[in-house]
Image (cartoon, rainbow, N blue to C red; front, side, top):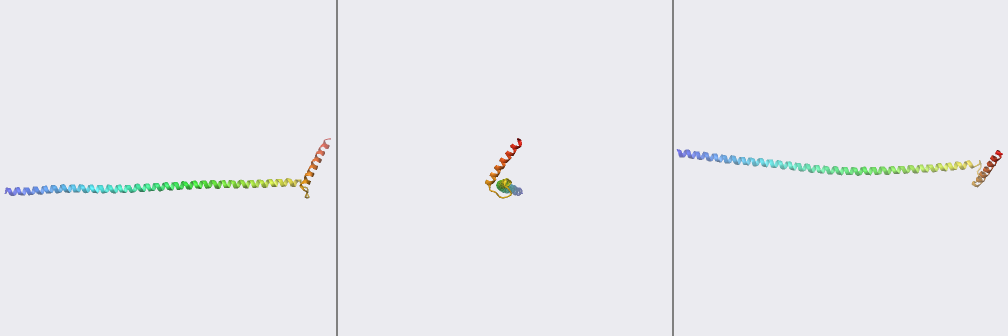
Length: 146
């Protein structure tokens, strides 16, 4: 009987040792599974973070390209504005100069008309008449003083 009890005790002990070994293996497997899950999640997080960083970098580059193209466009618009403004000023200046020349011509023609008598005479005749009128007016002023 004692042998039987020893045998049962050994069998119980063997089962307990097997149970302890199985529990230890299960705990190791459970830890390994947790580590694997943790590593998988960590890898997924790093992958997601990597994608976000690439997306952010691409958006930054696109923003820089957009900003550069807007800057180029703004500089072109400013240059075109200044060119058109310069053209407008030159046209206005040319128009004013043409108007001034036209006014000078009108003034010149008006002065010539003042020298003309009611009938048409040549320029040489006008100068002779003007000279005679000047002489006459000087003689009249000198005789009036006497």
